[in-house]
Length: 274
Image 1: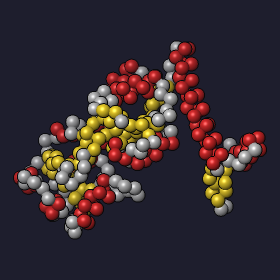
Image 2: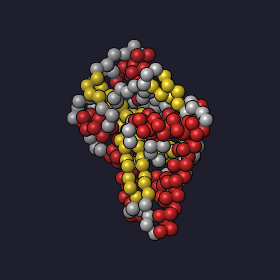
Image 3: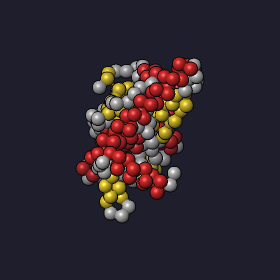
Image 4: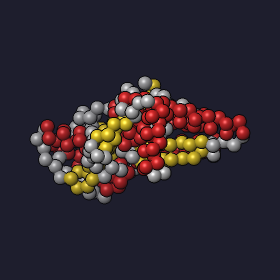
């Protein structure tokens, strides 16, 4: 569809409604008017209900069809989902999947936009406009290799941590763990050397075990990664508040049966809803 055709359709709709849906800012930028926002919300709601209708009609015809769209950080997708999906796929072999490896903030935006059904992220970043279900407790830990001298200390200070090369999370244009870490060192007038930058806990553990440096991670204690014999995970609750992992979705989401079953499976070890 060409831009001119879209513009003509919008103009025709505005003429029919008797009100402007867009406001032009400058030569290229368009924003929704108040009426446009109302129209957007209405159309989005209709499309969501239409998807539910298609799913229900497919069930009546005996030809099941459905989509499951999930977004979250690599570690959550890698450590949390596979076992759940293995069982789920046996029950719903006809589901079409879209699984996106994204930062927590990016996953949050995708949920907000309705581009995915569920997002997996820290509970603390979820706004009250979205629905969240608490999954597992998480904590920030320091990752060191099994032979590292920090293992011998009863209590680890920031001064001790700053003495060693650090493997840090990627810096993003949004609040993130890297921002928290840098702020903590700055407040304590400490300098450090960054040996590596990575958003993957699994990759960080590999290089910690090679002796490249020590690393920070926010993780679920029950995950398989804690069973690696070459690494030690030291709690940093003294410096970082504990949190929870949560599955997030829109409050106005029209949940289809296969999506509800997935949500129930994912939150099978649920500790509480909010």
